[in-house]
Amino acid sequence: MRAMVMSKGGDVNRSPLELRELPTPEPGPGLVRVKVSACGVCRTDIHLVEEELPPAKRPIVPGHEVVGIVDRVGSGVRTIKEGDRVGIAWLRETCGRCEFCASGRENLCLGARFTGYHEDGGYAEYALAPAAFAYPIPSVFTDEEAAPLLCAGIIGYRALRLSGVQPGQKLGLYGFGASAHLTIQVARQWGCAVYVCSLREEHRQLARDLGAVWVGGAAEAPPDKLHGAIIFAPAGELVPPALRALDRGGTLALAGIHMTPIPAIDYDRELFGERTIRSVTANTKQDGLDLLRDAAAIPIRPHTQRFRLEAANQALQQLKAGTIQGAGLLVMGGRDDSVLPVRG
Image (cartoon, rainbow, N blue to C red):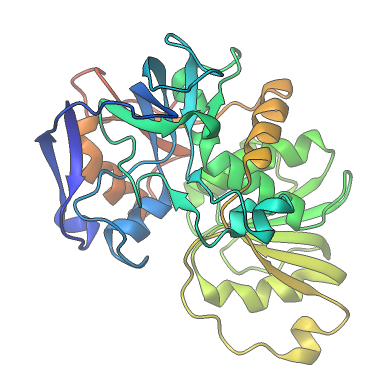
């Protein structure tokens, strides 16, 4: 099978991923093999490739927003059959025994393993996954629409919950990439007024198109106090202004797996008044099931930009530069154009 492989980390602008022919994997007990049709390109992949996350496996095939058809199942698999369409997300498996797993917080399990980090992911024509963590994909979504939901969607959904925002309240979003452009669709369905701060004008325009009531620069102060906010950009310097934008009792959720250093916080101006900061750490399987259910009911419509598998380096470069509108996707057997028009 063809796969984009990282043997050694480095700046994505130096194209560290290599196209290789690898043996097609065989599913062991409890695993399923997925013939990949689409795989989302996530900012976590940049953190992995540039080794802002501690290295776990080398060489590694990145990718953890995977959609495709099961073409082979391992022994003991009863819940999934050949021909089923499934998604593979970041959380691959957990120990199932620790206090976190026992209390429905398996995202905090110290024995958790992650797709495209501990085991090969979806930047390939085939991928393996434990059947217990393979998600059925609602029929309302095409493969390309479903792929970004499996990380950008799930993490945005969890961050929205952890922000404490209730239907009809005011929500702030800092950064407007793949995750935020999905999260705003859920928040708007809840009747929330959404205020967006973003660096790039094209992202601000997409926010307007998706119903933001106010749009400003990356650290600009919204005109109203917010009940909750989410920072999607991996920029620690946004934490103080985001806290200042919160009303008393508001919560700021930090959605990234990696963030640059956070500056000193002024207790009186930025934290007093029972304001709260919460990090978002991976997701539970239930988060994924809930997001896919609610996304299908809305239905969420991702804006996507397509790249061929062999253009994975280019996709990561554009993601880092902030020039992708919505979510980037690798498509298998796609057209010869590396980049196709934005859709959504």
